[in-house]
Image 1 (spheres, rainbow, N blue to C red):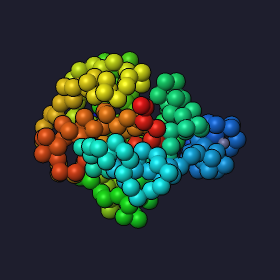
Image 2: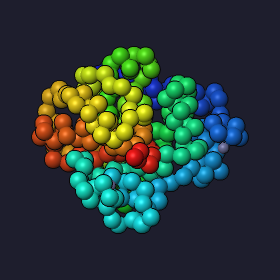
Image 3: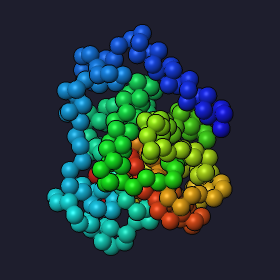
Image 4: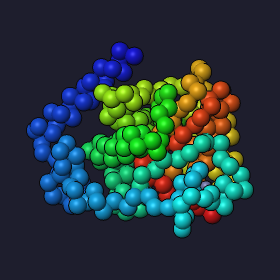
Length: 251
Ligand SMILES: [Zn+2]
Ligand SMILES: [Zn+2]
């Protein structure tokens, strides 16, 4: 707990020092950025926000207020999905820079974008406040090779942004663990994705009644659905899914 608090403090201090030494520069167009954000106002306005979507899984649809075909057939285990952006350029550029090129300034910008959207949605009543945030875990070996878990960084950013308000949210990174490695999901069909995830996640301890799973991108929803299944089996009543971007589902 103390170690976590110290890490948070150092990260916040390092960021404030970084912005006092180097003013923010837009990661997309290299123009001056905004206050402590490496994104200019123009590029931020060009990010594609979510339009009409499924009321349960946020699959993009022609009209809001209904369920997609797949949710009509079988409702997912998770209760709702909050995704402020569509997974399309230039959001994709920022996510690639963060996850695969290890540009921490891109991770910080994405964390700020998601945190701001969550904060507004909590204030407006679009979202209800969970008891804690649970980052979708990576397998320990993958986390070591990547050097970080992007979901954990986003969850900590949300927690830090809400730190001073009444909606303070702790991050529980140890509750849910990935105990088996999986094939990377992107090349797989939906049924294969589900099979690929059997027995992958395990609970360590008892979860609180209301949680929000946090991740960078949701595509088929199979991963978060499997996490939600394990969480509900362990006693969770409500599992929300908060992601930065929603991609269209593969066939
Ligand atoms: Zn820009
Ligand atoms: Zn749906």
